[in-house]
Length: 359
Ligand SMILES: [Zn+2]
Ligand SMILES: [Zn+2]
Image 1 (spheres, rainbow, N blue to C red):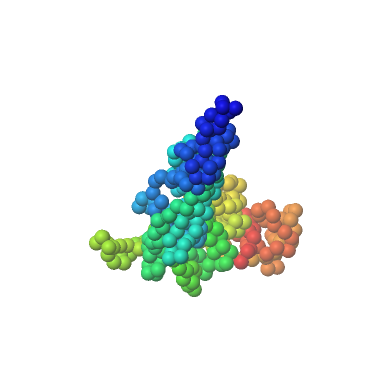
Image 2: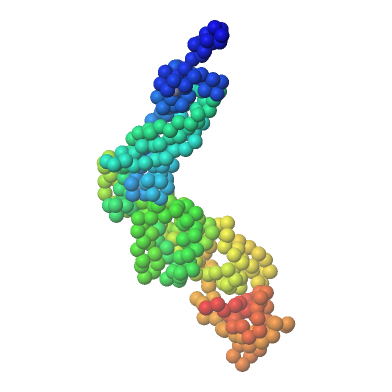
């Protein structure tokens, strides 16, 4: 009896709620686990919870650089807060370990932000969950790009043009696809539609250059670069604006042309080259984009609609015969021609060649 009574006395109890210590409910610092998590912070978030977010585009600042965030500033804040909490969370005595469960970001009345952080902590081998409200220091600052945009200011113009004089919807669509590989549209300040094509005003010279290079490499476009002085920057340096004229060739895959008067078919434009097949030499060849354009300029490459060529009609395929006026001629031509098809007729080194008439 007496011994039992003594044992009751030495069993510890919670000073707050009076609960007796047991293996499931240890007393730590005079408190049971339930009271401990009410009375004491069992984890903390170390490191800075200072978030700088652009209210216009949702980008965020780290050091001196802006990074793209979510489209919406509130989403960026929530995502960033979660990341900072994840990185900074630490168990606090007497807790030994911590596992993050959730972070909910809330905007309080008056515009302050808090993170409602729930974590599991272990105390003497028992895991308990605790939620803390942690203030966030959210600063909304308009990023550099948005500042430029708001002033309607831009650093580069990408002029989409065609050799033909006007740009087709199909060409614009293709150019747009290459553009989207470089930029998601964040850097576009404005579009200006012009009779001869489209001007894309951009906040970044780098984006303009990379987009133009892709159009040159994959579409065979001729790119002409020019600079103009537009004023002084805040730090007193001369500010220039870059203009990149991107001229899309008017010839398409499968169309004929003359290379040094020899009939040829364009087999494709890819990897920075025009690829072709020469009908008389029976040879495949290729020309780098810049070489193609300089040969266009010197008229060594001529498109068929630029010459005053005879137009005929295919009357048979095997043997290949073409009707020109009232005459019927045996000819040579590329594969894929059809009976009844309209063709250009080219005489080269005494032989008759036909090439598809596409325009
Ligand atoms: Zn208690
Ligand atoms: Zn912004």
